[in-house]
Image (cartoon, rainbow, N blue to C red):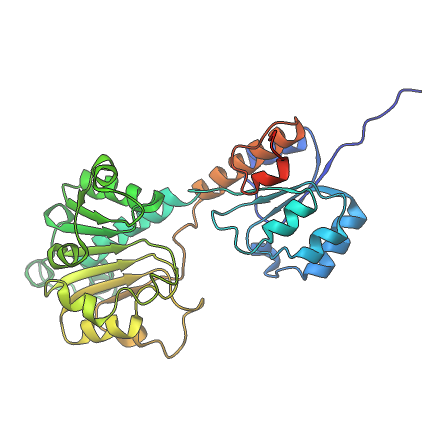
Length: 338
């Protein structure tokens, strides 16, 4: 009687692109149970029990926490694919001690977030929601009033300042330049030559703020960046400037932005990231004038799903073949020969 090989098991707690799922199913038994559908993050102990009971080799996560006890209780686990760039919710040291390879998917949403950043800029410059409401509410009764009263500005005539020139910042710069905007940038991790290579003009902090008529904040939430965009920083910006924030939580002080909107120093501000998600019901931005507030949808595109799915499946297949996954975040698990 012929021997049958046992196919590895994969549990994905994140949505997978159809084509990438089929690639995975060609070599493994796959269960997909996205947290965005269950609306529940798994209890670490319950997850460990399931991983052990089902003898799961590969686990894909996005928001679920993986702690040391999870790895200890699931000895069959060999691979964790994090379907986002940040790996702070996974205990990498514990993973390495357990011999588990961990990968991530950097830049999976860069195009999506950058495009939404540009969309928010254009919305602020042309006040698209008010114009649409003007028609929908049957207030468009003559051909002149709106044409004169809703005059906007063009992105190509703006000086766009970008704080944080990572993948999202670079993509935002490229798109803004395609509109004809003059783009300044600052990033402490890059020197002037690297900033110029990204197509931006390097600028010191005060100069960037003073010259930017449209400011895009893309830096992560770190101890050094929290509260970076405060009343003092906003006061350096030209009166009538606009701000777009798709940054990490706490980098932009929402109360200071709300105050700048109310006194007219800022002509508009757009946010897709807040200190809490959902936004606090008492957040001062909610009743600030000219504030465009979105429900944290920057990365919510089918392209984002396709990109992280391809990255995590590529890395898992490499792992199965005994090769080094391209996006490994705990290379120490492979030893000196890895």
